[in-house]
Length: 246
Image (cartoon, rainbow, N blue to C red):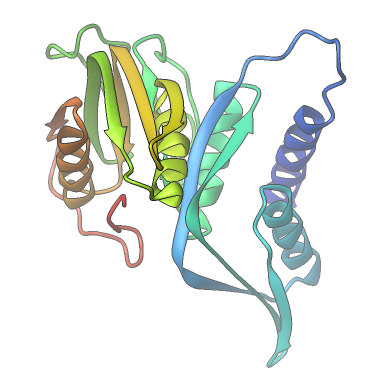
């Protein structure tokens, strides 16, 4: 029941942002990008938990299918395109990120150096693990149990030419917002340009060595300064978690 209460509180929090009235001061916004390129099915013996899970998926723009099967309820869903989830606090970001990962989604969220000494639940059974802030990416202390760290920045505005691939441009916008970059979008000459800028060092927590290496290579190819901070033993890639960014 505790997990169900937490899930319902997250649904309410996202719904409250969606109902922000015109004329009010816009609340701070925090972003997570998520997707799952393969259909995911979860089995629930508890019908109430299944319906709560389905409601949470609907809240974030994922369409679930429910099916009675062999005495339990199956919830099946997929979201092959990168999708942006907007919430009102860093605490909610990490609560949702933990839930998304437990639900089989690939996620991206960039934290800055100001993200220090804050306990948060990554959905891996270790709630409240601690971060320590860092500066300029130079040997900063970052104690965690979640996996390995990729730090990144781009000191100048960098432009990616999508060459008419609108879907790729849209995905890049979602990803850059989730990483915490400034973004400019421009369409001309039959193609879309996305420019991004991230002057300060930020970091992403990855679930495995291979995932961190993949993200580092992708960010570098895109024009970021990116480095993989290899901490602890290399962990195996969870099934269905490591997928190419694009």
